[in-house]
Length: 493
Image (cartoon, rainbow, N blue to C red):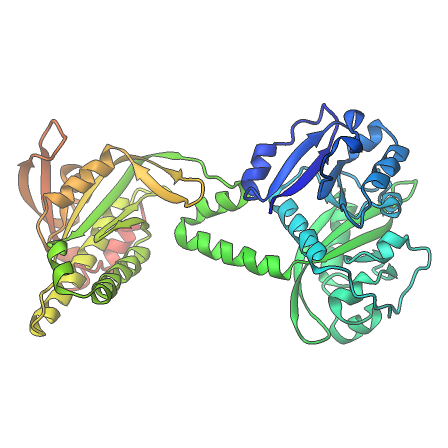
């Protein structure tokens, strides 16, 4: 179900990027901008599910206009969230009394808004709240909407002591405020707590609002993740008078968020996954020096005819997992697998100048693993798997494509040549272009193959087989593992 979100903002506040919000929030919310001067609740065939009220709309009109708005959209049915840079300036306690249920700080951040709306959505679906009333600290002057909120709303003095606590605290924590603090303590509400002192320092330095996340243990020993929004309230002289803390249970959303982050981390480079989390998209980049590796098993089609599907997938997965392990130790980025083909690259997304060495070292290790496995298979009377491998260094373009099933990929003639290097290579060998050889020639023993024609290329290409590391740079007799001297040289790139 797509929820309707009405954003009430003056005409001169059109910097709100609706398309960006939809991209960041996965299309689960339908946003509509509305100028307060043109707003007529009767014009809505269906009322909005949520209202985001820009504080500038209040300045432009009046608090009476807000009262009229909220009479058309009762907070119990349509939660109203204040969008503000300075909640105290907009008389936030007064707005709470009138029916504004929460606030979010400017500039409007899609990710924070997403979790705030999803939390409100969950509460609406859960039905009416449990009406337990066992607060040990009570303020009878608390506005009814604050008192009955399913958020935990705590008003604090600048010394950290609580002035008032609503019923929402016990709903979240499972026990009254004072009783909970006595048993468990709290990151924000305990006296001299780390979280409160941090917030106090920020407010003294001019911060107008803070949001933090922390884990709690409830009375029944369950763990929850809580989002706490802290807002300073100043007196007429500008001195800090009170701090309003609004707490929201984001446990389920936090778990889903972590799962999403882990999935993104597994699918994409760290830099790309962070961009996708923050903006819902990632910028494409040009790289001047990237080394691309293609690997492909010989006669794979024949192998598919001699093995069951399960046997084939299990065996292929054994090789791919080992390749992944090897390239990770050499700081390479896996791009993709295509059937039995494997592709990775060095020098992106974080640029470096050691990538030709990194890729060649990984390639020697990969071929050694495949060759060793082949000897074992032969001793068992099985057909060995054999691998061709090609490498080329040059310019590429890298980026994320797709809107639903994202894919990080690279393009350019460098990629095409690397693929042809694999096709024209030999099983068990590391085939590199003359371009890559120019970078590595002083440290590796190589065999020149001559100029070889490749498909769709005007000029023939110099090719070399990399046999091993030179003995003076090798830690083992086979010339696969670099010694300390070579690692020091590599660290200079």
